[in-house]
Length: 325
Image (cartoon, rainbow, N blue to C red; front, side, top):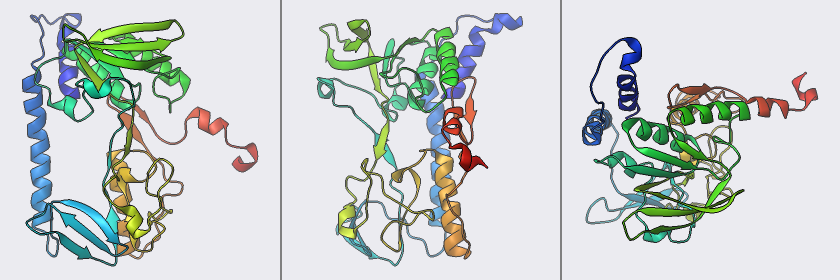
């Protein structure tokens, strides 16, 4: 989808390169169809590899712990399955955080999954949040042709980045024609008589309203642990609900591991792949791999892409001088 947005952006700028084109218009249904084909090829290929692997069973259903060595799976057939093992790996991922805003439960809203299934272009997309998801989808839909407003309660976009980096991102989005409102907190949402979504926003300038055709909630993600019944296994979680692990990705219960977004740390696909590398090295190759000191590169899929690895400048300056010797 980001690639399609990039093509639309370049097509509109074609005359800058001496190339003449007509009116540029994104067909979101076709964008979605192309995206879906890519996803299906990847998914079908992965499933075929799993199902063809010797001594590996794929069971589809809702899993939860019975005890530290037993998991039950419901919805996998007519009967509830009970599976026991000496080693269990939790890899249940994360899901969008839905903030407790007055009226939100009565208004149709989008999250990072459902927005990718739209077949018609929003006339005006309102986005709550100023993190990675907000930036990626905000710029994407603006380049498709939507009017976009980003509402972020913090003093900068991308709260984990250095302020000068966040400022450059802000400038890029403004150049694209996105209305970015910082230090703005949504306090109420409702549907108008005309079918528009209206947000009441409070900030330094007082209270104001902003209307749009669609609303994307991009205020973060939380661990998808609600139905795992972790307490039955004695697995500890932190104050945000993430499964606690040691440097080898093992929980407080011997034999139970957690990998991917269900544990604390950056929620990126390649981090999950590297978690597998650590588990594979330690359990199958008798190695001693650890997440301690692991460099964590990532990219935000905006245009131009923002990539980073290691500490931010702010984090580096916070390190005591003595520890650097």
